[in-house]
Length: 118
Image (cartoon, rainbow, N blue to C red; front, side, top):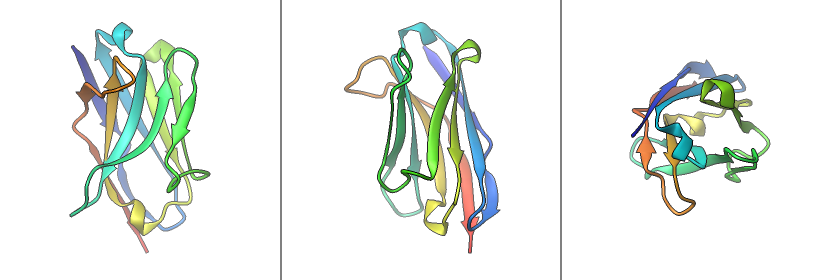
């Protein structure tokens, strides 16, 4: 089992920045990738970014490309989401996820709220 705990959410104004952290514990050696998702009120969950733990390869959604960056700190079993130039439409609960396969996300955190005001 893997436990994921997000932190770093909060409220910012348009154009501001936040850094989300995800701390992983447990049987993390089996995980090959970690990612961030978000769910805005009344909308479906949306994938934001992925990082492959082994080689550090990253992918991000077009909606955040150039503004958000996912990174990892392997020694501390942490993954980060640096969010810059935030917009009101980025307002959502952000979730950290971990997967042992490329086809599924097995573990999820509880989420952290990000609110961007205009």
